[in-house]
Amino acid sequence: NDDGGGVRIRDVQSCVGGGEIEKDGEELLEIPDVEKKHVLEVYDAIAPHFSDTRFAIWPGVNRFLSSLDKHSVVFDLGCGNGKYMHRSSSRNTNQVRILGCDSSEQLAQIAARGTCGDVAVGDAVRAPFRDSAADAAISIAVLHHLSTESRRIHAIRELLRVTRVGGKVLIYVWAREQ
Image 1 (tube, rainbow, N blue to C red):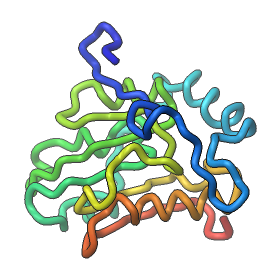
Image 2: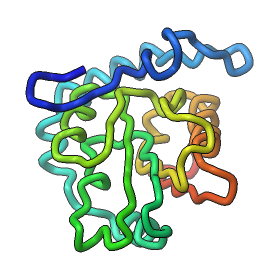
Image 3: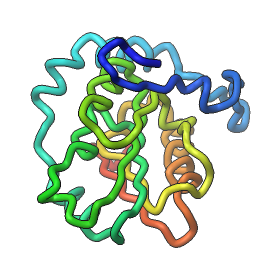
């Protein structure tokens, strides 16, 4: 969809095939109400302020991205405002291309502005990317937003699913007990 300002956002339903909900055991991978209320609605409401305060590139993430082969394709699951997609050319010397998804439509719109990559509105538990399509994938400060252990495990499986054999995955978490 085009928001009128030239920003291209893809709806996750068009990426995962008609909105079918997959099952992981007995748990539906649909976003639970608690996440809708305390994560999606909050981030949609605070997106501009959140984006204005989240611009610093974390050194460990920058080292990881800089270590990748030239022209690597990277998927950022839970890209937020797209700060890693917006790395300056002086930091992106290996010219990696980062494509992102975030479940907050407002943050995905912010991420899509000024990027050379695409951004999809999509849940990290049902990443809107093809199998083995990325050279690397990142999930930075995302897992603690998922309300159940099985959703967190499935999000990690999604990182592995979208990354090619021999690729690299970087996960940053706030609380190891999650």
